Amino acid sequence: MLITLVLAAHAASAPPVWKWPAGEVQRFHIETEIGTPRGMRYLAANNLDARAGAVKLTLDTACTGRAEGKTQIVKCEFAYFDMAGKTWVADEAGKLDAILDEWAADIRASAIEMEIAPDGRVKTFDLKAAKEQSNRREGFVMEQQRVLLQRAFAAFDLPLTTDAKDWIRGWDQKTSSALMQLQTIGGTAGAFEIKHKHTGERDGLTVIESTGRATLSAGAAVDASTGGRLVDVRVAGESLFDSARGMLMWRDYTIDGRLTVSAQEAGRGQELFQMGAIQWVDTFPAPGEAPLSVAASRAPRLDGKAPPIPDGVALVPFADLGMQPLYVQGFPDAAKPLGLPPVKVKARVVVSADGLPTSIAAYEGFEALGAATQAALEGARFPAKGSPYAVDLDVEWRPE
Image 1 (tube, rainbow, N blue to C red):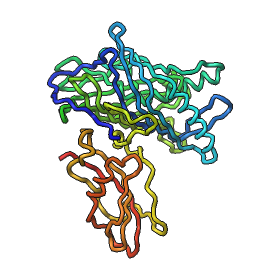
Image 2: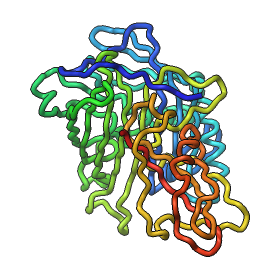
Image 3: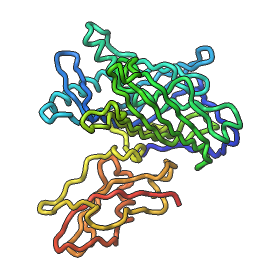
Image 4: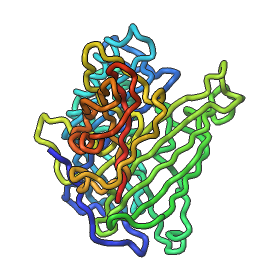
């Protein structure tokens, strides 16, 4: 089932305004991967814990707003939720899987509630757990889950200026930023700056670019002399906003956090990374069906499962072939309703001994563009190696 994006035949000439019509359901598909190279400990409710180096979330959420004074209270329930992680140490894989399965079950039955200011800034973020807390450990786990989900929903935090001059020259985000938060239950302290700029229109949607940086630490330890690690954080991304609807249609972002020189230990500088995307959708897949991953495929680390390789065929790194990346002009029909920025599709190609592709298969989650990818690669020439081989590559579809 293809998730479609409805586009507005409208070009914004003035600053747009967020709208959350009372009782009207807004549906979103969200994907994000959060990496903590030094390891993040996850706990289950009952005496089980494991460390993860990265966790990926994939979800469909239905959100409804209601006015409360000048702010909007937005409640989001889960139509689909899945999570997977990569262990920090190999022998904890089984434990981490069990913990994340428990978390996913808890979260599916829960809801998110955000308080959103008139300009679009997320003021508060709360997890409405489906079960009551029965002990301190369960309360700790619920707070861990809230902080993790806050990372996935951070894309909603897009304050818009009301000043026509700022709309032209760009504006600073003030007061707070959901993107500039560390994954810690002790809170985040520090200083940040995020700049937003309207850069044009695309397919009737308003394009906004965002860049920012921050120096952050967990809790109140903003001074290196206190022993807290200071993290230099950079963020960049692009949003597509429907001015007529007053709603975010798409946002992708990349966050990179590295320890400051004074806080580094043995050269291990990277503290965190996050790559993700959110897409407004008009419908969800049928109950029980996983959503397509086309929406967030721009995030480089959101890779699906690779197709199998025939017996006796070796996988050759693309970089070893001396070829340029493949760019295809013009979106295939399956992608046109999405109206998104360039879409990268991971594909696995089996090449004959004389350099001709004999089979082409898209990675799991990119099947919607699989047939078009096959058509684009038919007749392509690869280096001859004297025996069949397989190669993985990114196919980037670009607008005409």
